[in-house]
Amino acid sequence: MTCVAVLMTAFVLMLTSSSVIDGKYVEGVVDTSKDMEFLERFVFEPNELGQLWYEYKYPAEDCCYQVLFFNDAESQWPYVRANQDKLTCVEKLEQIPSNYNAVTTLSSHNCKNKTEDGQQMLVCTGTRHFVAPRARWWFINIANCNGISPRQGIYMQYKLNMTNGDRPIDKHFSADERFTLQTSIAFAILYFLMALTGVYYRFQLAKQRLLHSTYQLFFASVCMQLIALIFIIIALASFAGDGIEMPGLKTTGHIVSSFGDVLFVLMLMLVGKGYTITRGRLSTSGSIKLAIFTCLYAGTFIFLYVYAQSNFDPRDVMFIYDSPAAMALIVLRCIGVVWLYYCVFFTIKHFASKFKFYVPFMLFFAVWFVAEPIMIGVANEFIPTHKRAKIVNGIYWSAVFLGHMIFLVLTRPDRTNEYFPYHIKTNQIGAMLMTDSNEADFTNPYIGEPLTRSLTNIFVTTPPPKVDIPPPYTISGLRAPRVNNFIQTTLRAVSRSPPSSSPCDSLFQQTQAASAGPNLSVFCVERELSPGPLKKVNNNRPPSDPPKTASPPKGERPPGRKASFHLTARKSSSQVVPGTPPSQDQWMDKRRITDQEQFVEIPLNDLTVTDF
Image (cartoon, rainbow, N blue to C red; front, side):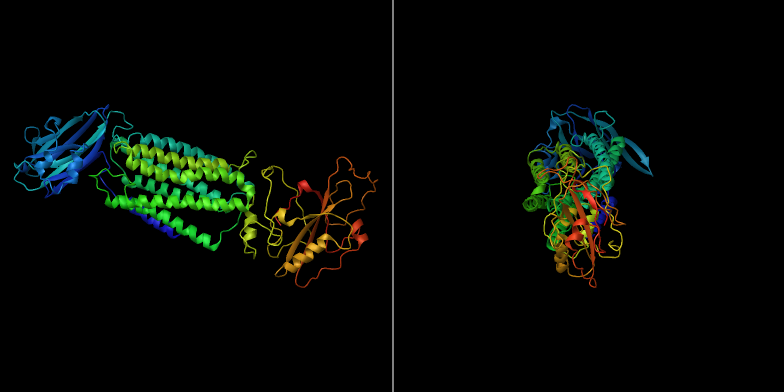
């Protein structure tokens, strides 16, 4: 909850923040005592009609100001920016070659005199075209360094509109941001289809009671990414229409996407530790470690955006990962991949039956974890600044989408999916958590055998047969059964023979001795060795005499007959002591059913105990 509160605080902060430096149509007022002031930057495409429409307005008595256009050549803006406190205004202006036609003087020759509120104003409007052999950054500045103006400093109102080409969908975008709208729309469509598929799979899992919290975290992360893309698309579409940025909405989209990434990483860690797959709860130390890691990861994203909002200067071409937060994110990702490998290794070691799921899971998501650090390093070192934004945007959404897609494929609830990891039903996890056992794994707390189950018949469409135990053998009003949580570990098949006491009696006595208290329900399965037709006996009355049939030759079984099993239910309490085991005759012919036993014959393959 603390992490969510911090995220929501950052969310509100970003919504209330505003900036004009991101918009390609900008207007404002410059009122400074400095002799040069930065206005805007833009990347003009070399093969497009790059143009700047401008309107400058300032008092005529302050004539004459100059508009300076620096490009990103090392001898121009980077040099001026690095030595801004050492160079004079004239020395800065001299960095622009005279043949570039990149200096415009705003005088009465190219401006009009207008009277506004009784004051003479120079109003300068026009269009400038930019032609360059390659895409490059242009930095627009207003200067008062020619020694003509009587005013110290600058006072000016301005409007700028920069475009690349004439296509309505992206003409307002700087060359480094072009195609980000199209990319966002494409991934929004993909995430919408993934969300629809996720809804269908959630329905299928819910029917089978396999909709675990880890899968719900995954689905929430998918929805968060879809919502983030919708926010970003709205902001970019509005910008494409009029060139006016919506920085609050766009930043909100990025924060929502980061929150979805945090949920996805949390889900991967839980799955790596086997939560809802091989265990029903985490240890206290494991939960604390995971909570610390998740909070640090979420806090890093918050710091990333807050640092960018507070410290990035528009005069510098800064990447969002050009910050200390990016280094923290790289460190956390590296820690995450090592920790994930550690968790998966021990999960496979103790539960080898999950090998098929965890091997592709680990191979892909180990690469996925380090993809973002690699992207940050490559972007900072090798991608030119005038191409960085659009390339990183495509790489980021590709990596995020592939991560969700691979997990969706691995966990799809299809009969042909041999990698499907879930086999414990949600109500069984709830029953296990209600017990007094300190073990977190899916094991029988008395027998200690790990739970294993074939995945071939999980998604059967026919309802399983129900075994009803009439009173006084029902468990209503009792504690959740401590043995009857999982069928493979509680229904023990034992050979039927005519001993002096029933094998179920022995199991009952052992279990009662191991119990810490009363109200224990025990279920036992005994194998019927004598061949006979399969017959289900009504629990409400004693079974009739079995038909007399001739015994088959030794070593042979009659065709079409299956082994049958007896389900024995017993109820014990601190006041009830098990009675004397039935005699051998009573045990063999099953004609006398005591008040402690009920028998139901069902095939082993169809044996399913539901909703006890």
